[in-house]
Length: 312
Image 1 (cartoon, one colour):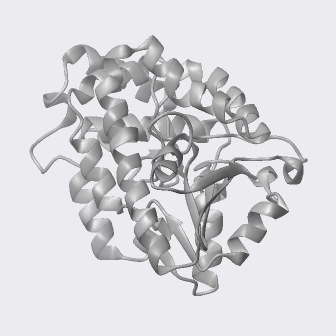
Image 2 (image 1 turned 180 degrees about the vertical axis):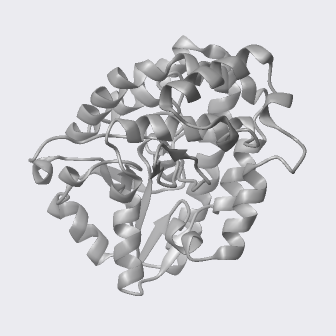
């Protein structure tokens, strides 16, 4: 998932807009990887090929934040993009960034209206934890005081990722979106930015997830390198373990969250991919890698619809 958000300033440097696929290691949200090797072209990555009759769908597991050393991508991935008729993404964030009206709508969905504050909607205990984190990161409290809980949760996760050198401008989805916009290629969306924001705001008990995120910020130092290695090896089972299985095993109370953020969306994504493939011979689909692995994934739903899927 990729959601651009109005983010606070960190010291004198503005924090880049964008949002993480697993919000800290406790549960799956936004899949974030740091890549710190110079041998990116030898990385396998997660690329699948789904075929049905004369239709082909390439499925690339996205990394929403990375660094420049991740490039160049493996030639097989770039070739699949070049051979495709259409680029399919979760949401076209580049189009949003050039649309002031849409940016305003995103802002309205992300913040409480004037007169309402975050501290009025969460417990004093959790708000105190947030204040401690803001102080540590030297971020003015005023930058967060009107954010809705889920948006605050995602924003602080993004800031922590960026503090570790990750950059949404180096993300895989943005890499291909930039190419497509530059080439005036056809781009189709599986969702929209506003849909994703509304989904976040529909979370039950978002305070619980904000609290857990604050408590597990330090776990990111362990999670990011593990997931980096899994993606670089193209190991679907390892990615599934890190993004979904371990989170559910450690926090079974988050099952409704996984249902909302992954399984429901996977079903809808798979349906749209099928619809798009009926109108185009070859699709290049870029979605968070967590959507492509394990049970009830986009991949599994496409197989149930008659597609033959293999990793390439």
